[in-house]
Image (tube, rainbow, N blue to C red):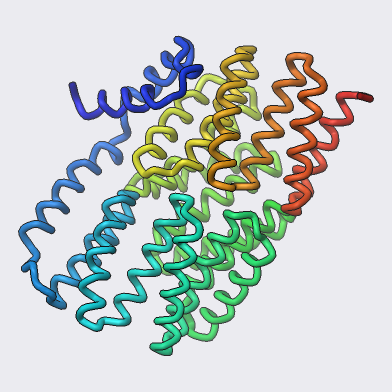
Length: 398
């Protein structure tokens, strides 16, 4: 059995029982049986890194070994091998602490915080980032502080604490501006634009994303460019400018695939899937979801999996496969509750309400819509809240 077959089998095996119906299994197997060249190449890269690590290190506390460990960890992280990255950073941190390399320890703690946040391990992430910031402060490194504060903002953002996240982004922006670090300026501005998008300021977000994209292009920051194109695509989709959205997704995906940014590839797969659902073109939705689901499993991104289940639930709702759709949406709810992601939770309640409305269960639909509305209002997601209000009105009087 090939490595590709094993990955597809794992994709299907880990689905819950209701998802193992023939219709789901067949769709996912057919869609995911071919992995992209970028994904296939990662196995070879991982083998090379492991060989390099085993033969290239002296086994002693040596500054050269420390630099090598940091570089290997950064390469793993860049390619979304998060487990390997974290383990390497832990090893490097032990060496850095013994050598008294405070600056390197600060960098490593910051990167460990980023990896933990991508796993939804919020408290651990905030702890590492707090330690990183204190070390940067001790060193008088304001640029480093800006990076730690920015990553803290991202964790708070994912937890739905938008007020605190905004404050963190603005502090990072101010500090980065003083130190002249344009990449941190662009990343902080990009994060503020994401919040503006959620809160319905599409024009402001669009302008901000374009500025960020220009900075990333000038700095030759491929990851920044890929994410900026992804975010631009999402705003264009929110404005229902489908051609512009797809063009941005294609540009972002091309950069991500060329550089092996699996996380961004998966997120763009979901962006495409959602766009195609809005257009009523169902032919490629399963493919996009299956590819995204496979990547999210590899990088242990459970929230990404939850969003994949949500979109598959929408797909099966449109197909009239009510039982399958219900199970998928319930799985999405369970994961979003487990990892405390309020935005995705509200979106899933909304889509569950649509399913109940389509099957004539008005009471269940109203309850799901009310949960979604409450969530969107708490987050200040005005456009989404208004949409759910219209869905509730369409149900008529209880």
